[in-house]
Length: 464
Image (cartoon, rainbow, N blue to C red):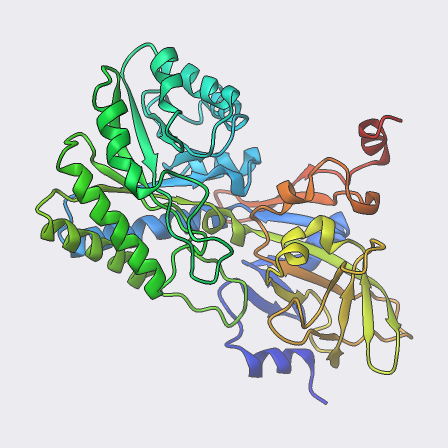
């Protein structure tokens, strides 16, 4: 019988950029994970901060190269979609790379102010404010504009939103319009609930924005749930959006920017392949071609990458506490955490993640199911949730050393969806969170961002 490392090497192109095995132990972006486990224990969440900057620089490079290749007379601006992860260490790391911000709700705006107070941003930063806005969100946006954040751009999501800014913003300001894109043919409804339908865009401009003495239309915003994919559906919707830009540009000279949203995929399997360079070139080329056909200047391009920015920086590490054979063929490895609370996308959306053991790569392997700590029957991860059957090194009863395993590229959304610092299903505590960085000499440094959640914090929330 072959060893686990033989299985991986014959199934995938391995080792890969992020994953290497040294002395039968897994290294993640050059970080020896057993050293992290020995220092901090499990369960454990970690964020490898340099990966955030690497992805930002890569996206900027491919879009700017595409602009240069096609002699495109517009600029590219990278915005970070804050809802992917609001943590200060994520925003501060991303902002080191000259990026801008996209927000989704009212409490994003106090974060913007905190970043300004700490000197992480200046008042000329673009703050693209999306979402269907409650009164507090609209008021926070107005306050930012009145305080000199002139590149704060409320993106209108309904026909009545502009009225608030007209009444509360003191000087001139810029706005955007989000267009309600059609959903995929197999979706539960035809058109996105977010944004303004195509038939109302020109009317909104003519009757509300154009007559205004303060508001100027800066950008059109576009986003589809599937993200940026090389499919007929994506190119059809993008083309339709660009044609609308061209139509509106002819009667609105100050419109000079399109925001194509986010949606660059991240690596969720060792089989992952995606030609980012080709997609960026196709986006730029298609925009230029359509604008040329319509005799209008090409727009500046904004993107709002969230998962792409932060997703591949994250990992969750567990230890296998025990194994249980529940019938003649279903073997369970019980982990010291919960998929429902720690990785809610794996539970709620069948999101695939890269799953690898941290140690015992020289051991024999077998097919297993992974079970979480809660009493919920859905707290599991197996071939149904994974991209294929789950194989792990065997546990040897006569040996006391534990098997550790990790889920990788988990850095986006999981803490906010799982209720970080709040009430967890079955009161399973949020695990420790460790930040990993490199100093100026390229040496790995770790910092404990948060300890494992304690019972007192939950009891207080529960009224005890």
